Length: 599
Image 1 (cartoon, helix red, strand yellow):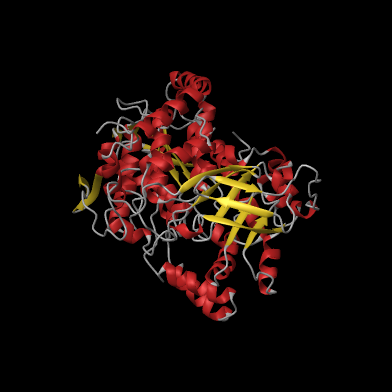
Image 2: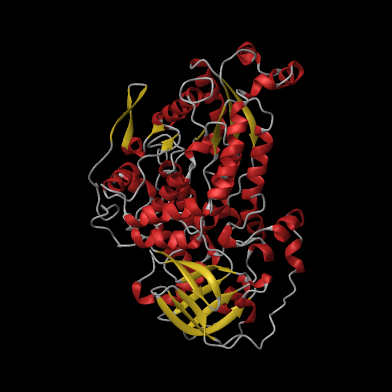
C-alpha cells in the first residue's frame, strides 16, 4: 500500500523544518561513534574504579565483551516500576550467558501522578521529566557502556529517558517495560464512584474501597493514560522488542522478553555487525509513526507536550499543526478507557499493538522502512511473542480483531479521525481531545467563570455556584506559573455538572491527565497567562466559544483595553520541594514546544 499523502506530506514538512538541527545532531553523533567503544578511551585508573565491585565480571569488563549500562527508574512506591527491583540481576545473568556484561549505570526519579494528583507535589511532575533526562545523562557520562537498557514506564519517565537516549544517541539502546497490572475494578465503575463522592452521595470509605480495587498490584494502571500511551509509542517508534508493552509483570513471558532485550542490546553494539545507534532509530519517520499511534489509539494529551521535547533532543521539530493534520488523516481504531470501557489488558487480548500496526501498515498510514532496535522494518512489530517451553519465539500476530467493541480496522474505525484538534483564536493556541467527548458537546459557548486555583473551582462547586452553562477558565496553571500540574482532580466535578444537563467546558493553560475524558477541555493554551497570554485578560461573564469542529477558541469580549490579571504567585515557589525548581519555572519553554528546560 502506498504511503498516505498526509503522512508523507507531514513527514516531509518535519524533515525540511528540521534540516539544519537534524544535520548538526547526526554530525555530533557520528563524531562520537567514530571514537569506537567507550571503554577504550578510559585510563587504567578510570577502569579500575568502574569495575572495582563487579566480582566475577571483572575479567570480562577488562576484555572486549560488550558492556550494557542499565538506567533504572525503580522504586516500590510506583506500582509500574516496582517489578524493576529484580531486573538488574536478570539482565546481568542474561548478559553473562550472551558473552556480555551489564552494570547499573544510574537511577532516575520516578513520580506517580496518581499519588500527587490534586496535591502540591504535582507541580514538580512535568519538570521531573527534565530531571530524569539529566540524571540518566549523569549515569551514562561514565563512558563505559557499549549499549544501554532503559527501565521506565510511566508519565514523565519514558519521555525523560528518551531525551537522554537521544542525547547519547551514538549508544544503542532498548526500552524494557514491566507491563500492566491485571484487571481490577472496571474503570467506568471507578469513575462513577468518584462522581458520587464529588456529589456528596457516598462517603470516603466507599471511595477508598473503589480506588483500592482499581489499583491493586504491580504494573501500570490499566486505563489508557500516559503510562500506557508511552508503552505504545515505544513499539510504534521501534525501541521496544515487538509485543513487549502489555505483558503482565511476574509472568514467564515477561521474564523471557527482558532476557531477549538484554541479548539484543549485546548484539547491536559497535563491537558487532549489527550496530544500531539510537540516533538512527529516532528519525523523522519514527516520530511520525509515534504520532500515528497516538491518534489511532486515542492516546494521552500529555504526549502533545512530551513528543516535541523528545524530538528536539534528536534535532527534530514537531508542531501542533503536525499533530492536528495527522489526527485528521488517522482513524481512531481503539476504544480503551477513558475512550471506552475496556482496559489495556482487554485491548491486548483483542489483538493489541501487533494487530494495529499490521492494519495501519496495510492502510498506508505508517512508515515501514524504518530502523528499529529489533531490526530493519516496522513489519517486525506485527509479530507476536510466544514461549516454546522456556524459549522465546515469534510468530505472525493477529490479522483480525478479536473484539470489535475494543479494536477495529482502519477501514471501519470508531471515528474517521484521531480525536486531537489544534485550537486557534484570540485566546491563543491549544489542543482538545475529542475522542471521548460526545459530538453534541464539541461546540460550547457560554459565559466564563475565571479561577486561579483548581481548589477554588471545587469550592465553587461545593457551594452550588454553578447553576447555568459555564466555561470554567483556569489560568496561571502553565509551566512558568506553577510547573503545569495535571488538573485531573477537576474531572469528577465537571462531569457531575455535565450530567446535570449543563453545557460546561474547561479552558486552561494547564494540562489534564492522560485519563481525561468526556468533558470538553481546551488545554495547553499558549502563551500562558503568566507570560502575558490572552487568558490573563479574561473576566467573569465574558462569552467564550470553544469549537472543536472548526478548531477555534475565542472570546467576544474586547480584551485590548484591559490590564492583565497579576495574581500573587509567590506561594507557588515554596513547599514540598518547589524551591528547588525555581530555575525550571524561569527558564522553561512554551507548552506547545514541549515546556522543556534541558532541550
